Amino acid sequence: MSERDVLNGKQVVFLSWRDTHNPEGGGAERYLETIAAGLVDRGARVTIFCAAHAAAPPEETLGGIRFVRRGTKLSVYLEGMRALRRGDLGRPDVVVDVQNGMPFFSRLVTRRPVVVLVHHVHREQWPVVYPGLAGKVGWFIERRVAPLLYRRSQYVAVSRATRTELRSLGVRGPRIAVVHNGTDPVVPVEGGRSETPMIAVVGRLVPHKRVEHAIDAVLELRERHPGLRLHVVGGGWWEARLHEYAAQRGAGDTVVFEGHVDEARKHEVYQRAWLLALPSLKEGWGLVVGEAGMHRTPTVAYREAGGTEESVVDGFSGVLVDDRAGFTKAIEALLDDEEERERLGRGARVTSHAFTWGHAQESFAAVVRATLGGRRLDALDPE
Image (cartoon, rainbow, N blue to C red; front, side):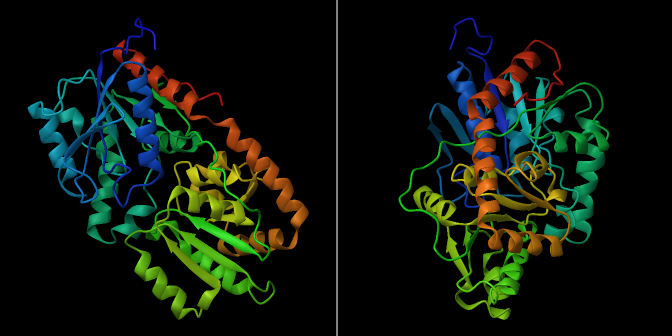
């Protein structure tokens, strides 16, 4: 870090719904904390404000990042506004408002420059997660209120698909920079592929991840593929419903729920799996795609999910499909064709190396530098 870096000594405050220690934390939170660590490495003083939870104390400093945790998953937005307004988070030079569907309304309580970080637009998720009036209100805020409130702010999107979605909501002008996710170094594990067909699903177990699609696919294919197993890695508030769904479908031992696992076990599943299934309704990027790719494991995902159109190179590192029938058909085709799986696996590994966290950190740092200088960036991450 150069002492002449304009970030040196500057204070950056992130307002986020969750952190990685939160049981509901996932790829978006890993992105946030990795980006924050990059700013710390460049001399910035970084605070992350997020919801309180039992897995971590109200305040602590980890890796040079100060964490302040207050409120619940719903009240965290009001608590964040209060903390920012009262100065509990210091006197930030830049505020990064992480809009996970709902913004923190930071523009109402600070005159400091605000960067809005968006993983994806939640058009499809609002009616799934919050059916009825609550979802309609949430979508109205995301679709109408947020673009108006942040009409002069710099945006960061994690994919070009997200940038296109933001433009469709009325975010105009050259001020949406794309900073892709990176891929963590591979965790070495012993052993190779499973001798019997094995498919993995990795991620938070919530409705919009649509794990049911993967369960249905393997149950349809198991008679033609003896020994076929689906390993579901992760946890979440939808987990009990998925257990019930699998039991009602007569899954038996065809579906294996691994729950929360450590990194070593997660990567062992990637290594042993023939395919990664990603049936999610929406992904800002899909960190699991790169993680699996490090193990030469290709991905089958929905094209409609947005960020998957960039994290999965269709026909090179995996297969993108348009509907549920196509999802099952693509999985079956790859189970039947070892040579094609291996070809896509080689492509998955190449693609996973194309996106690095180091580059993502420098790209985000460039956005913050420009914001401090009163400029806007609208450049794509070149990787």
